[in-house]
Length: 310
Image (cartoon, rainbow, N blue to C red; front, top):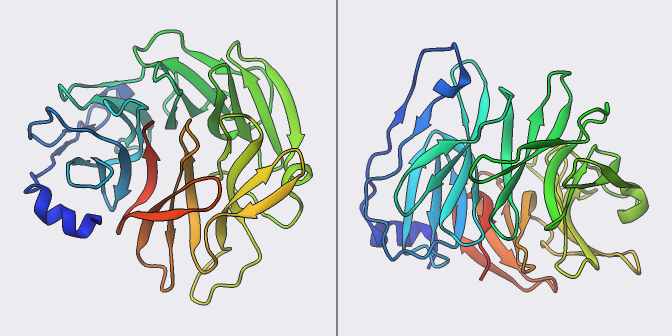
């Protein structure tokens, strides 16, 4: 059952309140999203996504769900118990918060920046990677434990801007700078750099919000990128989801033609979630696929999906 049907059947939505604070002395006083005041016991959350100005956490059939407003970049933890998200305040500062969906508590990740966003959970749910703007006005990758301990900025001394971090495995993180794909270890050291065109070919265009994910066995690279498709009615380049076989350098398209896919997320057990829109490109759906391109529609209206482990 898709979202637009399940929404009416599952529960009566409760008004979500976003409280704003006008005290700009510290970004600790950023806007705070208030979770729906419904019972969350015995709910099995498997997916998080955005729909307009709300983010949702839901079971995979969308029959059980909660939502709250004023937040972006929903990232559900691998066990489905926590939700990380980005909040922006009235002066444009961005910060990452974590909500415990069982007891409805929420708290801010404490790092020394006024601009950090786009959380990505490690497979064990212990740590979060994210993009962070440092004092030298360079985009870096931050990593912190979910309990706010052991914060580190990776490759902090270099002048390399990096975007859209993801976890290669429990000990390594990858990110890109539009031209190269970088690998970092958790001590903050840059351990590898590969030209993206050398990996996937020269027929794709890369934007700062394009993500790359390694498959669980490390043999494949899953990514979304701009292509040469001409889609009538679409402003800007079309994007799609692809799988690169690293040994053969064979690139296989996962998302079908005619769908523009600006966001992809891959779980640590190799399920590919992505959001895409067909002509007239006014409403995006959420899909899930395996590495072989077997696709199912999960949500009829939504963007920016992230999923749990099975």
